[in-house]
Structure formats: C-alpha cells, structure tokens
Amino acid sequence: MKSSTLSGKIGIVARTSVGMVRQNNEDFHGYSTNIFDKENGWHFYDTSVVEQNKQAVLLVLADGMGGLEMGEEAARIAVETTRDMAYNNAEKITQNIDNLKPHFNDIFAGVNSAILKYAKEQNKVGDLGTTLIIVFIINNAAHVFWIGDSRCYLLSGGSLKPVSKDHSYVQDLVDQGKITYEQSFFHPESNIITKYMGDPKQTPIPSYTKVNLQEGDLLLLCSDGLNGMLQDAEIENHFYEQNDLSQICQNLIDDANNAGGNDNNTIILTSFGDFEKFMLLPTESNDFKETYSKVNHEPTYEKPIQKQKEIENKIVYRMSTQKALLFFALGCLFAIAVFLIFEKISGTCISGCNSETDSTAVNISNDSILLDKATDNLNVETDNISVNSNPVTNTETVRNPGDVELFQLPTDVRFIIDDIVLKIDSLDSPTTFDLDIKRQCALLKTHTPRGTEQIGFISEWQMKVMLEKLIEYLVKPNDYFFNAKVNELNEIIDKL
Image (cartoon, rainbow, N blue to C red; front, side):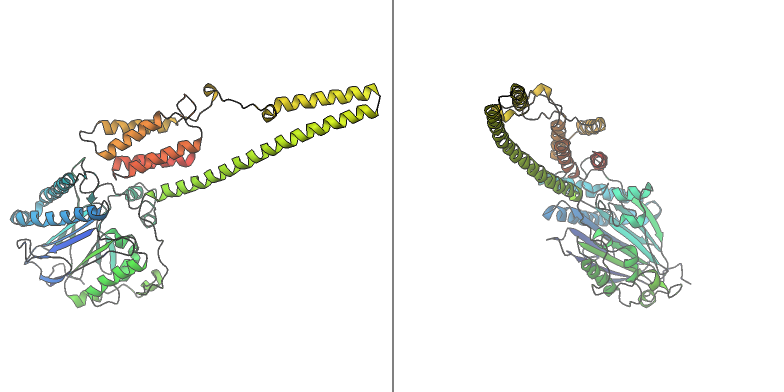
C-alpha cells in the first residue's frame, strides 16, 4: 500500500524535440528546484533530484504559436516571465499555500502583458501567442494552473489520467456530449484553442486543480506534440517494464516522432518517491497487453491517424474540390461550344440539302399537291431554324442585367456576418485581422457580379468561394468568438 506522505525524493527529467515536420522548435520549458534561487535553481534540459519538503518545485511549459520566431518568442517570454515573477514573489507564494490562486493569476496576467508588450514592439499584436501550464509542488501536493491545451497527466497505481482539461474547441464538443474523449484524438480541428496567452482582447484567467500526491506517483507535463500523436493508452504503456525515467522520456519523444512528429514535442516527467519503486509499478493483473497493444520502440506498430494540425485542412479540401468542379464545368462549356458550332455547320448543310431535294422534287413531279406539301415543309423548317438557332442569323443574345436571377446570401449567414461586424465594432483597439474580417464581411454583403447591377452571386459555387475566403480570415486570430462563427459557417456551407 502506498504511503500518503512523500518521504523520498523528487526526480525530474525534461526533454524536447522539434519533431519531424517543423523547421524550428516553438516549445519552451523550464523548472525550478528552488524558486528562491533564480540563477542556480532554474533548469532546462536537465535531470534533477531534490529532497521533498525542503524546497518548493516549479514546473513550466509553453507551446508557442504564430509561426517561425513569433511562436518561439511568445513561449520563451512566458517561461522566463514566470520564472522572474515566481522568484520576486517566492516568499508570498510559499507562505500562502492555502490561497495560491491570486498569486498565480497575477503571474499569468504578467505573462500576458509581457507578450503583448513584445508584440507591440514588433508590430505583431494579435499575431503571436502561447499556451502555458505551471505546476507548483509543495507539501505533498501539486497545484496545476493552465491556459490552452498543454497537458498535465498523473500516473498513479499503474493508471494514467489527465489532470488538466484542454481549453479547446474539441474539448467543448466532448463537454457537450457531441463526441467522446477518445474520438477527440482523431478530430481534424483538435488544434483550435479557446484560450491563449498573448490575447489582446482579454486577460486569460487560468484554470486550476490540486493533486494530492502519494509515494510512487508521477506527473507528466507535455505539449500537444505528444498527446496529439500518441493516445493516452499508448503513453501509459511506456511506463511498464522500464527502470529508467530518462529512457522513458526519450522513448515517448521517439515514438511520437515515429508516429509522424507533426509538431514540436516537449515533456517534463516528475516522479515522487524512490526511483526503483516507482519504475517497477505494480499492476492489478498481467493482462494489460490484452487491453492495449504494447508499444514497441521500433516503428512497427500500427500508427495512430496522422492528422494535419491546421484548421485550414477542411478549407483546403473544399477549395481543391471546388477547383476540380471548376475545371469540369469549363470542360463541359467547351464541349457545348463545340457542339453548337457543329450544329451551326450541320444546320446550314441540312438547309441546303433540303432546298436541293425539294427543287428536284418540283422538277420531276408536276403534281401540284406534292409541290404544295414540299413548299409547306420547307417554310416550316426554315421558320424553325430562324427562331431556334441564333447563330444562323449571326446575332447574339444580349443579357439584360435586370432579368438575371442571382443567388442571395442565406438569412442565417447574414445574421452571422452582422454578429461578426458588431463584435468588431465593439472593440476598443481592433487588430489588422479584425479589420480584414470586417472588410471581407462588407464584400460579401455588397457583392455585385460583373455585367449586372444587382447584389448577389452568379452561382452557389461563387458564394461558397467567398464564404470560404471569410473563413480563412476568421481562423487567423485564433479567437474563441470567431472560431465559433467558423463552425456555424461550415455547417451552413455543408448544406448548400
């Protein structure tokens, strides 16, 4: 039976990897074995062992976004600001264990301000941000604070469970009962987060939970480069039959890369108690291999679905489909044009042949009835040609703009556009993204096709293309309100 008191040591291992797809690492991490020592107590890619109940331990991980240097800088600022603020307020934090939330809320607010300050200096406000998860360990408990979808897991009694809950669109679907937690792993929009550090519109307030620790427990902090490539059961399998915490950490990174490595991957493992006791975790039975396929550290197991971690996947798919339909339509128009030209030539020949035949009939037969019938047939046929075939008369039909029937935006789309514009108009300091979105909304509501004087769209396809363009603008700020509107628009487009 495990002891409720941690009498042993705390072991910490941290590793990071750029992954197999990205060019640079936008993750940043660090941990402190002594928050009172800013210089010597702070570690990055190290393995550390500290005595429990002698120092407070701080674990910090950030997953930047914004591309290239922007995401990397946002994550770095988040971790370093956390380090500085924790050091400056170390005494207050350690003396108020029962009321930690105000202190860490202040840290998150300070991080957000630091990121916004850097973004303003670079003229990149709204273009960069980061997740942030902080674990403060003291007095046999872990206090977990987070914004975004970087995770904290607890491994206790041989079972791995998530401690944090993602701030993400997919997690909202799970909470609403629309999909299961297991299905969320395969969802194509699992990267959409609903809270992030660096938000210019609001100061994020972190979620919080407390975990009471026992001898032999382990905490796993990770960016979504791990849990986005390996399911929870696969992660859990790595802790069986292993006797080296550093090797477990490296195996997790290697297997995430073997499964595709679509994103940067950072892991901080923290064990509580004796290393040997922790490494050889007892299990209720030996049938776990039947429940989950054991992860082999060679890339021979069946890999999870390798999902592209960008919301534009769905848009790109639709656009590619629409391009294919466009080429098909152009091909059909070309075939129709060839057919009309051929019909024109054939019609002229048939008219000439009919005239010849009728003339011959008149010359051969002097029967007045036959002559009358032939003449009537000729008149009827030439009348039909002159009425139904414009090319014969060498005239073109000119379309009257007032007679064109155009496709109009559905009412629910207009409501969505109005909501978006009202939201932007209510902002004190709209970003360039906000202004681009507002401009695209105006274009949609006032679109006038060439050759007409009416507002509308020549076809549903044209309307869909412009709605997709609006969606492209809406996803860029990674804003919760805009992301919700994207989902509403996607549902409407799917029904068109």
